[in-house]
Length: 251
Image: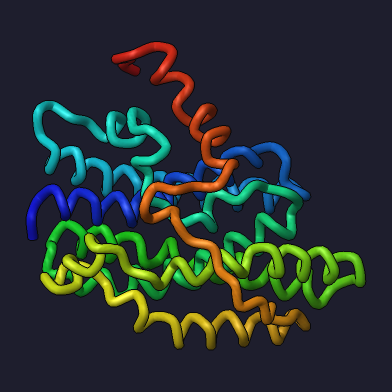
């Protein structure tokens, strides 16, 4: 697989973790209770840990002295390849959990398959990450059930979040040119093949939570091509502030 194309494929994986980790980082100190606050912060740290491994590999492919920080902080908005789902704002706690759950189920299925990649580095990252991602999925799934099958207010807010976030889920399974090439070279994952298991697992949890899968047939996409929602620019202004303000800063 051409190295530049492999670089872009890695970005498509890693940027999801970076942007979702940033969203969770915004909640530090704002969780509904101390235990949940710490859990969400730890999930963010897990995602950033995985991101470092991906970006170190991406920087190695770029060469010319590039670093993981360059990859993370010095790209423009159109150069990020994350799906639109992960950049959605923390409207309320139901949105935080709904966004996390809808991504976690996909992420687990994806990492499970990435372990079998012919690329030894990607395979190693996936094998290291699988336990963390499994915990993320269990954590968010338990909260979906707790809120959905809780009070009238918690159920209403959880359903509101699922209704708003569901139209962003189809993009998870649509493949761009780099993903197709990675699959052809047995480096990447066949995303459409994950859809059946995803729908089954999400549906089972939502049923237990007394929540409904929205019937809206319209889905949003564009993130994988660098076309993002209005939320992305504000998120990046926070994420990149230190590097942009103090160029070439070393810790």
